[in-house]
Length: 128
Image (cartoon, rainbow, N blue to C red):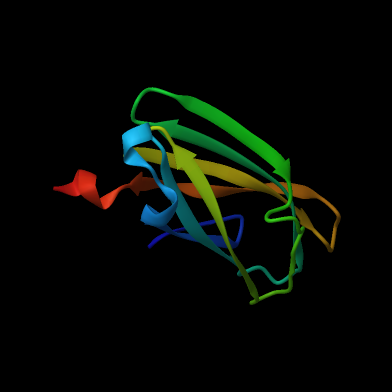
């Protein structure tokens, strides 16, 4: 697991290769990732937006942005956490993702950015 704290919010990431949803013969590789967001601040925060940078080892790169995560904009009270699972498809056996969340401090209504640490997406067959 990879973790990083920025602006008092800890982001932890685990990634998993999804063999049942992949088709290596057609260069289709599916990965899932579990994100845990924990608020270490003494104020509540709301996750407003996400921004991802996705790199594929075949040289492809893409940006993904949008409101919230998995259809919600969670509010985290001090000391609380939110966890979700999502996915990413690649055209090769390896890649990397990182990005950030735009959060709102619900006390002063100011927005701030929380970094999502880089994490690898690697199909087990590539590790031999």
